Length: 195
Image (cartoon, rainbow, N blue to C red; front, side, top):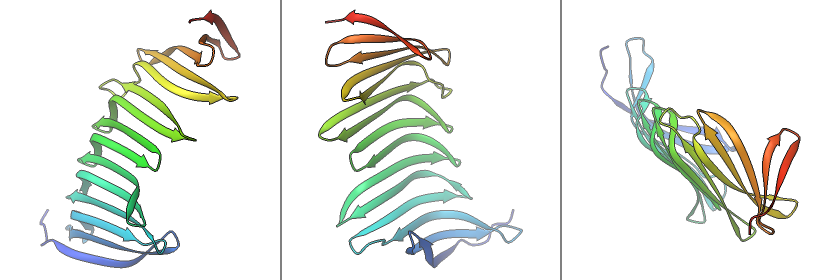
């Protein structure tokens, strides 16, 4: 492949959110005159008088590489943010997702979730917590923990995974301490108060 000199291109307007945005990116043309993105990419759109949405990232010979950042900004304050790392166009490395009252974090390797993913959600003044674990191959492993509100009752839910299979599910009523174990699709086995 003979690589043409890198050209800087600004294209606008690009419709999004029924408004106008500005893309800025670099590319070269391959032997078939097709554009191959290479270098920094930015996008910005002002969808209200006070707010805007931005994307920044990097391409390497047509593939996403390094940190990509998506942001929603309102009244000069970031109100939503997603950061993902790429290698060779696959998610690879840490990511975070933070819209308003959500904080999610985890890691990818070669496009697969790995390790521990956590998420905290603030609703009606109460924080809810989620935790999930993945093997190096991206399969669910170990104990996953979730908070849930069902009919006004706060429950902690635990899922146990072994060899990529769900082997048990437990719900703990926070008001009474009672545990319920998953028995089959239509029945829950109840256990006495654990307190």
